[in-house]
Image (cartoon, rainbow, N blue to C red; front, side):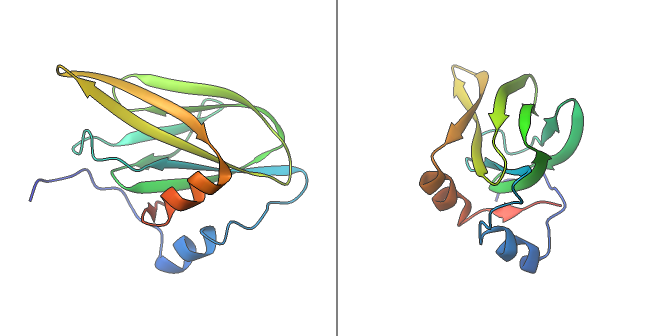
Length: 130
Protein backbone atom coordinates (compact mmCIF):
# COMPACT_ATOMS: atom_id res chain seq x y z
CA UNK A 1 0.00 0.00 0.00
CA UNK A 2 1.37 3.41 -0.99
CA UNK A 3 1.53 6.15 1.62
CA UNK A 4 -0.83 9.07 1.16
CA UNK A 5 -1.02 12.60 2.49
CA UNK A 6 -2.98 12.82 5.72
CA UNK A 7 -5.42 15.56 6.68
CA UNK A 8 -7.64 15.85 9.76
CA UNK A 9 -11.05 14.34 9.05
CA UNK A 10 -14.34 15.59 10.47
CA UNK A 11 -16.31 13.24 12.73
CA UNK A 12 -18.64 10.85 10.90
CA UNK A 13 -21.69 12.78 12.17
CA UNK A 14 -20.45 16.03 10.56
CA UNK A 15 -19.72 14.18 7.32
CA UNK A 16 -23.24 12.71 7.30
CA UNK A 17 -24.81 16.09 8.13
CA UNK A 18 -22.96 17.80 5.26
CA UNK A 19 -24.21 15.12 2.88
CA UNK A 20 -27.86 16.03 3.60
CA UNK A 21 -27.11 19.03 1.33
CA UNK A 22 -29.41 21.32 3.30
CA UNK A 23 -29.73 24.74 1.71
CA UNK A 24 -27.89 27.59 3.49
CA UNK A 25 -29.73 30.72 4.66
CA UNK A 26 -30.91 33.11 1.92
CA UNK A 27 -27.99 35.51 2.47
CA UNK A 28 -25.29 32.79 2.31
CA UNK A 29 -24.00 30.26 -0.22
CA UNK A 30 -22.53 26.83 0.55
CA UNK A 31 -19.59 25.55 -1.50
CA UNK A 32 -18.47 21.92 -1.52
CA UNK A 33 -14.92 21.45 -2.86
CA UNK A 34 -13.98 17.83 -3.60
CA UNK A 35 -10.75 16.06 -4.48
CA UNK A 36 -12.13 12.74 -5.75
CA UNK A 37 -9.19 11.35 -7.73
CA UNK A 38 -5.96 9.55 -6.75
CA UNK A 39 -3.36 11.66 -8.57
CA UNK A 40 -0.51 13.08 -6.45
CA UNK A 41 -1.28 10.96 -3.36
CA UNK A 42 1.60 12.35 -1.29
CA UNK A 43 0.50 15.97 -1.59
CA UNK A 44 -2.10 17.98 0.27
CA UNK A 45 -4.07 20.67 -1.52
CA UNK A 46 -4.85 23.96 0.24
CA UNK A 47 -8.33 25.44 -0.23
CA UNK A 48 -8.33 29.24 -0.13
CA UNK A 49 -11.36 31.56 -0.34
CA UNK A 50 -10.82 35.23 -1.08
CA UNK A 51 -7.17 34.89 -0.04
CA UNK A 52 -7.97 33.20 3.29
CA UNK A 53 -6.81 29.59 3.87
CA UNK A 54 -9.80 27.41 4.78
CA UNK A 55 -8.65 23.78 4.86
CA UNK A 56 -6.51 21.16 3.17
CA UNK A 57 -7.64 18.26 1.00
CA UNK A 58 -6.06 14.87 0.47
CA UNK A 59 -7.22 12.08 -1.82
CA UNK A 60 -10.92 11.28 -1.63
CA UNK A 61 -11.82 14.18 0.67
CA UNK A 62 -13.96 17.32 0.50
CA UNK A 63 -14.58 20.49 2.44
CA UNK A 64 -17.69 22.61 2.96
CA UNK A 65 -17.49 26.39 3.02
CA UNK A 66 -20.31 28.81 3.87
CA UNK A 67 -19.77 32.32 2.49
CA UNK A 68 -21.88 35.46 2.16
CA UNK A 69 -23.72 35.64 -1.16
CA UNK A 70 -21.78 37.52 -3.83
CA UNK A 71 -18.54 37.31 -5.78
CA UNK A 72 -15.79 35.07 -4.40
CA UNK A 73 -12.48 33.64 -5.53
CA UNK A 74 -12.16 29.93 -4.75
CA UNK A 75 -8.59 28.66 -5.10
CA UNK A 76 -6.94 25.27 -4.63
CA UNK A 77 -3.17 25.03 -4.38
CA UNK A 78 -1.05 21.91 -4.58
CA UNK A 79 2.10 22.92 -6.46
CA UNK A 80 0.55 25.69 -8.49
CA UNK A 81 -2.72 27.52 -7.83
CA UNK A 82 -5.88 27.16 -9.82
CA UNK A 83 -8.90 29.34 -9.11
CA UNK A 84 -12.37 30.35 -10.18
CA UNK A 85 -14.17 33.65 -9.61
CA UNK A 86 -17.83 32.94 -8.98
CA UNK A 87 -20.98 34.94 -8.27
CA UNK A 88 -22.57 32.78 -5.57
CA UNK A 89 -26.29 33.25 -4.99
CA UNK A 90 -27.67 33.05 -1.48
CA UNK A 91 -29.65 29.98 -0.45
CA UNK A 92 -27.79 27.75 -2.94
CA UNK A 93 -25.29 24.91 -2.77
CA UNK A 94 -22.37 24.82 -5.22
CA UNK A 95 -20.17 21.85 -6.03
CA UNK A 96 -16.59 22.07 -7.26
CA UNK A 97 -14.14 19.38 -8.26
CA UNK A 98 -10.38 19.68 -8.03
CA UNK A 99 -8.20 17.28 -9.95
CA UNK A 100 -4.63 16.99 -11.10
CA UNK A 101 -4.07 15.71 -14.61
CA UNK A 102 -0.68 14.14 -15.23
CA UNK A 103 0.69 13.76 -18.73
CA UNK A 104 4.33 12.89 -19.40
CA UNK A 105 5.24 13.72 -15.78
CA UNK A 106 3.73 17.22 -16.06
CA UNK A 107 1.01 18.00 -13.54
CA UNK A 108 -1.85 20.28 -14.55
CA UNK A 109 -4.36 21.29 -11.85
CA UNK A 110 -8.00 21.80 -12.79
CA UNK A 111 -10.91 23.23 -10.84
CA UNK A 112 -14.44 23.12 -12.20
CA UNK A 113 -18.02 23.66 -11.11
CA UNK A 114 -20.21 20.56 -11.22
CA UNK A 115 -23.94 20.24 -11.75
CA UNK A 116 -25.68 19.65 -8.41
CA UNK A 117 -26.61 16.00 -9.10
CA UNK A 118 -23.07 15.13 -10.21
CA UNK A 119 -21.54 16.92 -7.23
CA UNK A 120 -23.80 15.14 -4.75
CA UNK A 121 -23.00 11.77 -6.35
CA UNK A 122 -19.22 12.39 -6.21
CA UNK A 123 -19.36 13.31 -2.52
CA UNK A 124 -21.08 10.04 -1.52
CA UNK A 125 -17.80 8.13 -1.20
CA UNK A 126 -15.58 11.00 0.02
CA UNK A 127 -14.76 12.04 3.60
CA UNK A 128 -15.18 15.55 4.95
CA UNK A 129 -12.11 17.32 6.32
CA UNK A 130 -12.09 19.62 9.33
